[in-house]
Length: 259
Ligand code: NAI
View 1: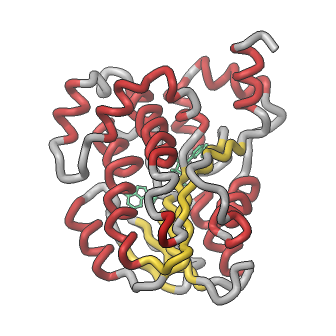
View 2: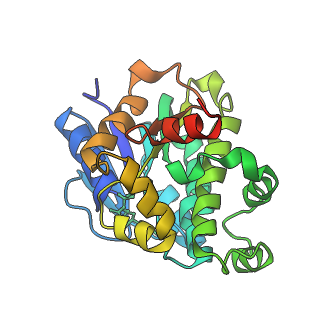
């Protein structure tokens, strides 16, 4: 499925990104890893800070042409400052993706690692639209202050992921003439180095969630879904948000509607 393909995987140094890189390589692909920390299991590595405009521009310039897919997996947890969360999880990701579109091969696939935290975007459409009007080079610190994102640490994370899901929906047909599709994958809690940050920030709410789950996910639960969404078998999957959460989003919906 992935033989003779080349993919860019951001966040390749740890967790879900590292596992995605590993299984893509195992399936015969060439993997170009991007991270702010050195990534071991990749063919080529680019060090970059995906929240920094100059670093993202340099990266776009350095990455090769005719790549078959981009997995936007790098992300920071809610314990990071709001500005960093908005930069890395949203505006940097969008800047990188839009900058790479002209260089990608026709038929390429893009996968955005969103989150169960973004599932309820319908309740926050106005703020999501404001977030999506931001550019990486904008004064994001002021935006965060205006939106009160610093006051509630988790809100920046939820907003970044809600906006990422909405951006994915909006771009369903953006590059259809080149057969480039983009989808989101939204995990529930996954055992990686940042899980403890989520639990810390979300407090009781997270504890309640963890009680109804049989277990948290692992990178091995998520990476195969990312790999599938990158593959040619998923070409008619466009603008979708694939929830991979052990049933949590179904649970939320059945509770909400008394089903
Ligand atoms: P992780 O901490 O193991 O991996 C994140 C990677 O992103 C790290 O290698 C880190 O160095 C890299 N990164 C962070 N900031 C960066 C920057 N400015 N520039 C370049 N690289 C940067 O965490 P995990 O869990 O594998 O996270 C991957 C994605 O999955 C993130 O987008 C996260 O929001 C999302 N996610 C994670 C969940 C979880 O429970 N672990 C649940 C839902 C979504």
